[in-house]
Every structure is written in C-alpha cells, then in structure tokens.
Image 1 (cartoon, rainbow, N blue to C red):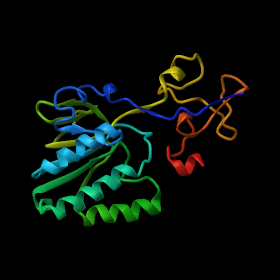
Image 2: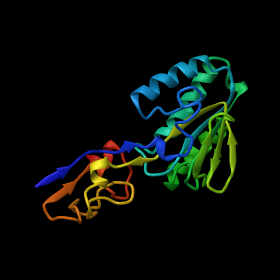
Image 3: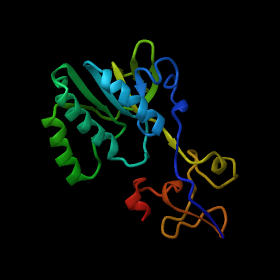
Length: 206
C-alpha cells in the first residue's frame, strides 16, 4: 500500500510577472519561511500607502490566513502610527471574504469596522512589478505600494508526472469518503495532497 502525504506546493511562477521585477522588494508571500522573513523587513520600513493582500486562486493552505494577516497588519500599522496613511485591500477570487455564512457575517463586519476594503471575485492574472499594478483576468486593475501574494497552490511535481494520479493542479484524485486514489486500489492520499473539496488545514487533515 502506498500513502501519499506530500502536501501542497507554492507556485508563484504560474502567475505572470509575480516573480519578476519587484519580487522580494515590493511583492512578497508569507507562505514560505524566506518570504515571511523578507516581508518582515519590508513591513518595518513601510511608511504608508496601499497594502494589497491578494489570493491568486483557491485552494490554499489555511484559507483564513489571509484575513488573519489583514488584521495583524491593521494592528501593526496602528502601533506604528501609520494606519491613517495606509489603505488595506483584500483581493479574493471568492464572492466574499469568507464563504461560511456565520463566519462571513462576523468577519465581514470586522473588515468593515477596521476599514479593510474587499475586492471580490478577483482572479489575478498578471502582475506588473515595475508599475506596481495587479491585473485580474477581466482586466480589473489594483495599484499597490506593497503586495502580499498568496500564490497558486498545487500538488508535488511527481503527482503531475504520474499518469492518472493527479488533477490539473497536481492534487491526488481520491474517493472523497475513503481517500483511496482513483488510479489504483492500493494507493491512498491524505492531508493537503488530496483533491478533496475541503479546507487545506491541519484540523481537516486530523
């Protein structure tokens, strides 16, 4: 029996321009240790402007994390006396900040209270790092001074290269009730490696 538990990989290079000019200078991701360390330095030298948090596409590891970052940024900027000089924007491919009705109501009110703007149904297609602009597939434009990207997630490369094992993003195709891979009876997958339509979070894996 083979159990695949290879998690989810970050694929920032799949978004045109994201890892080009400005990557690690005005555009970051905290979904890696290196990215988080670089973002800390950028936040420490940030003096105000437009801070954009963009979820490129779902699914992502810990779907609530981008909202948590927005709230932490709000607190950090208040502490530094810069909140009045900063506009925080959350751009999401979802039709709201969160999809679960009760949580959406509470979190929506929090975002409004903290004056965090939400750009919904925003599917990021490309980044112009020189001009510091983010463009959606339908050509909506969001300018930024500091971009925090939650990049596209996919399965491990070996999944994609194993015929029939994974879906178009490289997540293992499994039976939703048994986690048995559809390609072979003796292969199973768990955690973030699967294509089960649930949140990619520790609680779900457990």
